[in-house]
Length: 234
Image 1: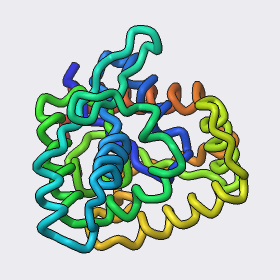
Image 2: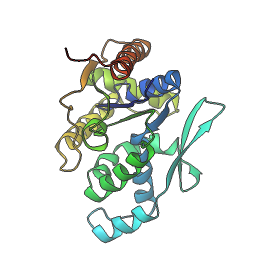
Image 3: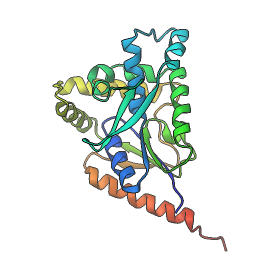
């Protein structure tokens, strides 16, 4: 059957990345974590004290940023590399979470990353999650999902994720961070977080990861059949 581009957009801590990884694994598709790409860029900007209000400095930094993904056999998932260095743990800290929306809002950054993402998806057979995949990166994607969830549940999930990385963060601080990110993500000028007109909404507040994956897997199979065996108009 024809391979698809599956775009999964939505708010942070809704289970997008975990769902996308599992879905890609089941389908034998390439998984691309666009959020990790923006986090890696944010890490570089912080490490090199890049002034976000200086277009020349931002452009110069982007030319030096190379983000790649390598499969980690031990974890059975891909790690993010920034200029050849594994930064998977470092980009998941609250320090990066606090700044990633500011960096992501820069037009130059989004254009640079979108170009890279489109290049990665040329051959199709990919699952990509982020904020603007179904609207800006791949508006032609055959299947678009938009995830949302109650903010308190999202904050709790993020807290558990951080605890798993041995980072202890107060729940109120996480709620504040997520609220800020939601505002910045939905109001930025370039590639804002909005639901594509043809995206299917999934509220993950009371849905398990397995249920999310199964639901999207069924949608994917239906879409494959629809494209491979189109019903002719009589």
